[in-house]
Amino acid sequence: MRQATVAELDAPELEVFVSRKWDEDVVPRLIEYIHIPCKSPHFDADWATNGHIDAAVTLAERWSRDQPILGLKIEVVRLEGRTPVLFFEIDGEAPGTVLMYGHLDKQPEMTGWHDGFGPWIPVLHEGKLYGRGGADDGYAIFASLLALSALKGQGVAHARIVGLIETCEESGSYDLPHYLDALKSRIGNVDLVIGLDSGCGNYEQLWVTTSLRGMVAGTLTVEVLNEGVHSGDASGIVPSSFRIARLLLDRIEEAGTGHILPNEFYCEIPVERSEQAMLAGKTLGDPMLTRFPFAGKTEPMTHDHGQAVLNRTWRPFLSVVGADGLPAIKDAGNVLRPKTALKLSLRLPPLVDGQRATEDLKRMLEAEPPENAKVTFESDQAATGWHAPPTAPWLKEVVDAASKQFYGKPAMMMGEGGTIPFMAMLGDSFPDAQFLITGVLGPKSNAHGPNEFLHIAYAKKLTACVAQVIAGHAARN
Image 1: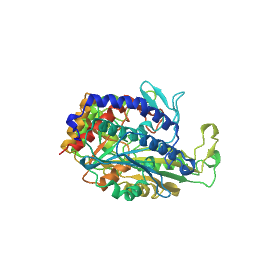
Image 2 (image 1 turned 135 degrees about the vertical axis):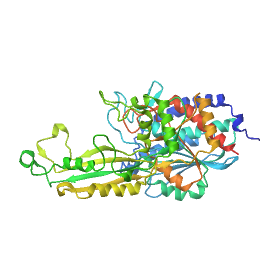
Image 3 (image 1 turned 60 degrees about the horizontal axis):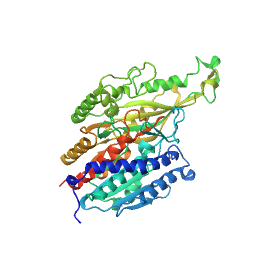
Image 4 (image 1 turned 90 degrees about the vertical axis):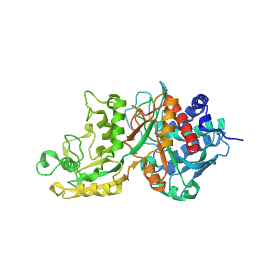
């Protein structure tokens, strides 16, 4: 039987099919998934005993096996002592191999959810599905196989497809290299990677991620005493551990501007990416800045839309994301505390080596501590960012056509500020592959924070776009 080509793809039929399946099948499964507190192992050291990651994988596996996709092979692969991966494979009619990627592990709960909402409480509201992990990115396995099911339903040709759905991404994907090695012969030589763990600048067109920042995360600890003492007795003699921590951070960050000081944490921004950032900033306009839930009259660090894009994609910035040694205000007596510990997250430009940056940051923070205090920096995550190879003409053409077909607007290209360690790993493993990295994390979707949501209408159209790109890959020659 002759296979149809991308030119013969019935786009309206595809869109209707995808929309119906999302409503009837995908959304109900995502509701089940959101109920599962399958936190990444970095946030749940007892993940193997607690069983939540296994529950999420089992849900996805059962759904996948129920899909009417001829030739689909599904397997949960487990390496000793490591989080499992869901691996799927479908033979194709066209040359080449497409690797589809997503993850099922989640960030921790966070506070600040709307009344009646919560990380493990799925809520459908105004076309959005709220709850932890739906958008980041539990939907990926469902959207991937639904796109393939749509192509199979129309008899449209595609290349060989392999899928890798991991459960360690939010911890830095430290288990993934072992699976890439174990599955190397089964994955084969990949020439297109489709990753659905990224974001979108708006919900009006397809956004292609061209770069991802790396990161260094770890804990800075300053100790000045073996136990707390009366502040009236000791202040003026015993240095404040908080003041010393502040001085150490001043080595890294200019407090008045947030500018990162050491040159080691910068790289040159490619001209093409700078131009794309300016265009993305112009396209997005003020919503690029106002999409964040600023408190009171808080101002953004820049009002220049293009520079805002570059700040969050190609420049380093520091966040203090946690603290120990600071009692709650209601419990805070007049005590000069023995130590202050701050969890740091330093986002790195895409071309800065994460391991080298970790060593640099440790050296800078620990060297010659003020007042000779006891200072340590212990890293718990390090990742190098990713920069996409030049986009092949066929991919650029089919991506733009898909965006116009299903969204009515051309596709946009922009870097993202987050980190997906898998991309750098794949870039190293398959240097000649093309990449379609995209996702549903748009304005106010708030992955990692409270009130994370999945924009269902956008996800439907994205699924249809993925199907058209896979068909376009098969017809690229």
